[in-house]
Length: 343
Ligand code: TXA
Ligand code: MG
Image (cartoon, rainbow, N blue to C red; front, side, top):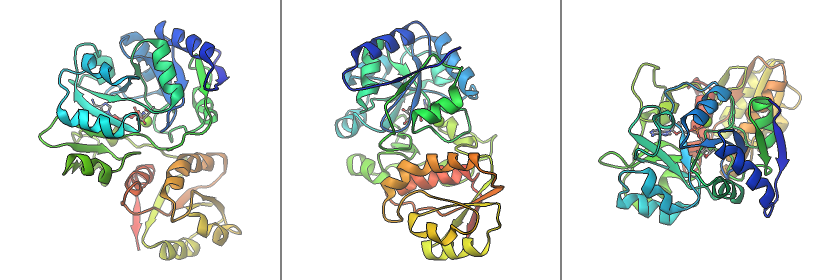
């Protein structure tokens, strides 16, 4: 299959009409969102959705998020929309938040991976919403990477993983948040954070009160344990070389890494420390220690960057769990398979 790449501009209606037609006829289109690039298919068409799983090599038990362009669509996709969902939508939609709710029969089992719940998201990226509207159907879309690899934040990342496997890539430049949406379940007694992301735990709690935090966010979960978000149990976001997180204050961890590197070590660190490692192995800064938004934007690109070098191990600094740091740290810990040295 020849994968067509099209650069998009805000008022390119023709492009969205063409891409929308591909979605409606069962094809796959990768598109930008404010979080990461999504790999979209018609969420109401099981066969189209099966194509997503094939192109990504995604495990069958990992459900997909359905993307909508208007809040009202939630009522046809979900059996119950509790007041908390309306509150969250008022505060954070359109935006980087996914709500897990009881699904209606409109969403096929292939999308929910056999669960009776569905992840629903209303993205803020104008191109994502233009595509959903042009398609005229909700769009099921996981991140547009090969399963297990870091999520794509540019069209070049998508192309590297999906060339020849999908019909079209809409190139909208780099994603502004840079890591995936927050996933919160509203199906239990209390709201439960299943994946930290662009909307912080603190922001959720300012609207909902206490939110439970799934254990899989901070700790390794064994593959046969039952987890609330099936995606959380798989190794994820991983470059080829194994990653080890060095945990402690930035000064201490930089000092530790400096005394533990060999010529084939890759170093993933805050920008302030890049010069410390320049003469040694392969170093990549992923944002200032004081700028967690920059870290979120750059973490996946930095992780992918190591795959074009011959490093045999990667030592990484990691932010603390405060605010957006919880999401950045979660992606790094997953990339490291929770291999963490506390110093
Ligand atoms: O920012 C995002 O959410 C991006 C963009 C494209 O919107 N999408 C994305 O999708 O990250 P994906 O498939 O890579 O991650 C979806 C996560 C997985 O961990 C999955 O298990 C969880 O959401 N999820 C989806 N539906 C669920 C459900 N019904 N119950 C529990 N977890 C669910
Ligand atoms: Mg993903």
